[in-house]
Length: 223
Image 1 (cartoon, rainbow, N blue to C red):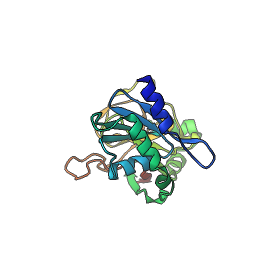
Image 2 (spheres, rainbow, N blue to C red):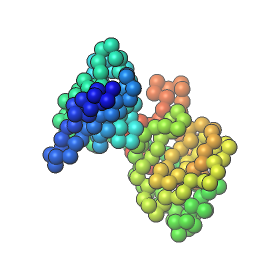
Image 3 (tube, helix red, strand yellow):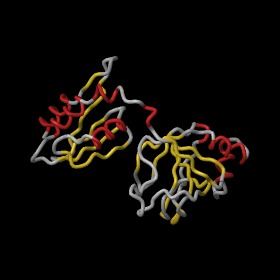
C-alpha cells in the first residue's frame, strides 16, 4: 500500500505556473483516494459531470475531493493521473459561474447581543456588518444540508459555545469561529445563534433537496 501511495502521489503532482504542486493524492484504503487541490470545487464539478472510469462518487470538502472508485476497474494512481490530466481545463474555468443566494433573516437570536458586544458594535451595526458580507459555501457537512460558509471577517468571528445546546431550531442562523451557517433542521449545536430564516434549506420533495451547493455565494438580508 505504501508503494501504491507513493505512485499515486507522484502521478498527482501537477504544477502551476509558479512551480507549486496543484494536485496531491492521498490513498484512502483500497477503494478511495483524497485529492488535495486549491480548485477542489472545480474538480468536483468536473468529475461529477464527466466521471472517470470506475468512479463511484466524488465528495468535495475544504481543499479536497475524496473519490470513491471500483477497485476492479481502476486504482488510486489512475484516478490521480486522470485528475491531473484535467488540470489545464480546470484552471481556465470561469469562477463567476457560482450562484448567489440571498436569505431573509430575522435577526433576533439569543446570542446576537453577545456577538455584537464582542465585536464592539451595537446590535444594528453588527447586523449591518453581517449583511454586508458575501459568504461562500466551502463544503457541506455535520448534518444533511448544513453548509459551512466562509468569508466572515475576523472582526465578526466569535468562539463556539463552551457547551452545545441540546436543541437548535431549524432555520437558525449561527456563527462559530471563522464560519457562518444555517441549521437545516432541529439538532444539537454549539454555534452562536444570531437569527432565524424561513428559507427551506433542506426539502426532500425538491429534485435537488439541498438549497445550496459547494461554491455558491450567500448573503443575508433583514427579513
